[in-house]
Amino acid sequence: MNGFSLKIEKFLEILIERGGYKEVLIGLQNTVLIAVAGLIIGTVIGTLIAAVRVLPKYSKIVKALDGFCSFYVGLFRGTPMVVQLLVFYYVMLPLMGIRMSSVVVAITVFGLNSGAYISEIMRAGILSVDPGQMEGARSVGLSYTSAMMKIVIPQAIKNILPTLGNEFIALIKETSVVSFVGAKDLYLAFQSIGSGTYEYMVPYLAMAIIYIVIVCLITLGIKVMERRLRKGDRK
Amino acid sequence: MTENNKLIEVRGLCKDFGDNKVLKDINTDIMKGEKVVVIGPSGSGKSTFLRCLNCMEDPTAGAIIFGGENIADMSVDINVHRQKMGMVFQHFNLFNNKTVIENIMLAPILIGKKNLKKQKKDNLLIKLHLKKGEVIPVTTSVSEITANAREKAIELLKRIGLEEKADAYPSSLSGGQKQRVAIVRSLAMDPDVILFDEPTSALDPEMVGEVLELMKDLANQGMTMVVVTHEMGFAKEVGTRIIFMDEGRFVEEATPEEFFAHPKSERAIEFLSKVL
Image (cartoon, rainbow over all chains, first blue to last red; front, side, top):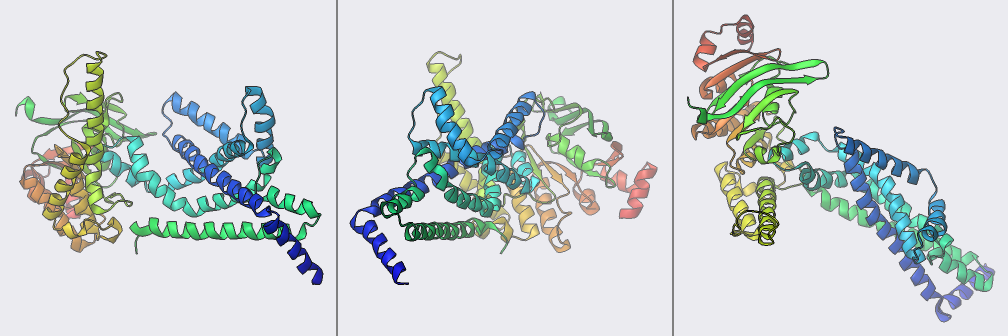
């Protein structure tokens, strides 16, 4: 046990006195930033795709859009996140001649990827709303788009909030692969602390604890949001 | 009756669901101020007929002429016409994510804002000589639209005695209250006609009365109504014309006095013997 407390001492020394906490804070910031921004972009993309996929398929334009959306979802669900990061960073960007910081790359890929997953969650959410809600909104003269935006999607989001929270938690944890393209996340911060002393036990344990704490906080946040959104429900 | 009194003209209306022909060549005119009550056995196409009138179901063939346009034509902006055709549903279809007053104000505010935006855009285009026409000065504002909508909503809620429920959500209302709110929601757009799709069928028996009372009230004020219902008492008392439907056709059309006293077709006699 003596050895373990020695390791903790050493870890705390690097963390506090030699400025290791700065790296951890940057890592924490990037991890949260990538996950939050990814979730927001993903929700927007996912909602758009879901809205297209529930459209009645009368016209050719809708059919073409629907085909494109299925292709998109298939593409992003069919490859691992790491592969998408690597392909985007080492293939797409050089081909297009664009320079981007690795954090921006990570946010983009996470947004595109979660968009594919969220679109399916959102589609289920939209289908779970009573069709009478759409009819009621159309009967007073609202357009399909307004009815969708004002009435159906808000109710769909309420229904899928627990699942959306799950997606957010998954995103937070998946950020641990962004170091593949050089983005400084939590994993990279603790890895560099460990590599200073070749002593990884305590840094990785601390990293695990931080992840758990973040996820617990998110879970709590979702519960609060759910309670607020449920105010219109049967008591 | 003169041509001007025709509110809705139905010409050769057909509706198929796959191979199932639900409506077969229906022709009728609905006049201003008329209270048309549509009755018939279940599966006879009553609700489908009603839902075709505001194109909630797209007719397979035929024309629905309302406001001088054939609204069954897909190129017509149906939303503009639906503002003038209120609809009341069997299951109320109040917006669950909005409070009672928001339910009533939603359409007037959204549509008011949309028209305001369009007017401003048109004016700009005319000023830039990109469009012909005259600049119509903008006389309203978003806050005025909202204030007017709220005032009207409160007035409507007072009329049904539910002003204290303005900020409640629909889930906390009884069935009868929900349906009365749904009726005034359709009134918020000042419609020319209201379509009722079995408005009392999903209600507890003790709540049917309050909804019928409100409908009678509307009828007395001269509102044009098309009502699909199983309430024969209401049909007799309020209706000015009874349409008896069976198998996708109008089997009989008559005044209530005539229809209930001397039904002509065998199918109507059989139906009435069961429901009365």
